[in-house]
Image 1 (spheres, helix red, strand yellow):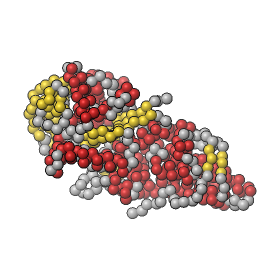
Image 2 (cartoon, helix red, strand yellow):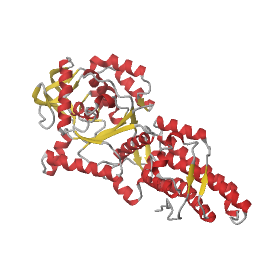
Image 3 (cartoon, rainbow, N blue to C red):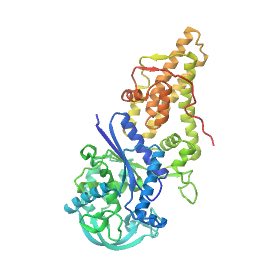
Image 4 (cartoon, rainbow, N blue to C red):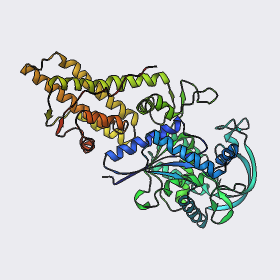
Length: 495
């Protein structure tokens, strides 16, 4: 049995408050981490902010604040956002922390001593948005293809470079031996194609920048943001590195897959570390068919969204609208329809029916064992283990639909609890409903923690008892008692 599980989000730029795309990546990591904890695996989950960048320096200057005052303010905004979204992280790393500076300088020195870092006078076009120099193939109409609204800077300065080209064959061999290293497969294929096109050494320092981590072998320069930022994943496990490294999953956006799938591997090997086990890559999504834009006014603030609707609605739609890794569209109208169909009408209806039957019987119900949908539950576990969150959550709601169908077919509302034969039928239907409702709630715990705890409580299953049953959802002795009707678990939402 796996003894540990370590998952990370991207380390987000600190010059902006997290948007819905950032929230999507964090929800993914959070859900996978919750499932790991429910499976009784020692779990670590890190997130944080990338502060040693020119973006932060420029943003601080635009506000009239010192760089550190600005960084402190933005770090708090990021933490406040994740706390508001109930992201249950273990560690929040800031790249301005002394623990990170000291560790980055240590690995820089290792790579330098290994002969993988050298000095070179360099001239080229630099994109502040990407924090990287651009080749001619990366430029469209004189601009960076990913940041067409920003001017490229012509830089000429002394830099230190990392010998990425030295690791080209090793990277290709690694990918051939690890076909599941990058998910989805389309991103994996993109990296292979990029590496086969030839790797060039890349700059790891800036001479003109003064805000950042000084190179241990040349204090006149600070390390370039990608070299600095990526090592955050190791900084957070320095208390017990041998236990936690390699990371099991890095959740990242597809725009940074090249840095994680190529640069990161070479940097790790150069410093004497093994590669992480997997990169789980998210795609891009539009909002109501349009690219998110402040000028259009369709940028979704995730905290404001859950304030108006709910966290459950946001998570449900993000996870069911499209599989992880694919591009998709966030439809405001469809999000409401999905919530009403799956949570209010399906799961909420099943709970309310169970409550109504219990009140009709008016007494405590006990049942020994029940095995229903064993194959489906095993499939759920398999899907969660491979981070197929869309199909996992869809399966749980399909399960709820089947139980609602069973209730419709058995028409328990026609039975008279005062007649012994009818009462026996009522009890049988109710046992079936609640036993399976508990299983559905456990399946949905990683996604909707608060509401599923509430559901379990209302059907008389203490939370601690419920999570002890996760390893065997199909067979277990259990007692049920719904004490009172209370309010509906989920209300229909309209707009």
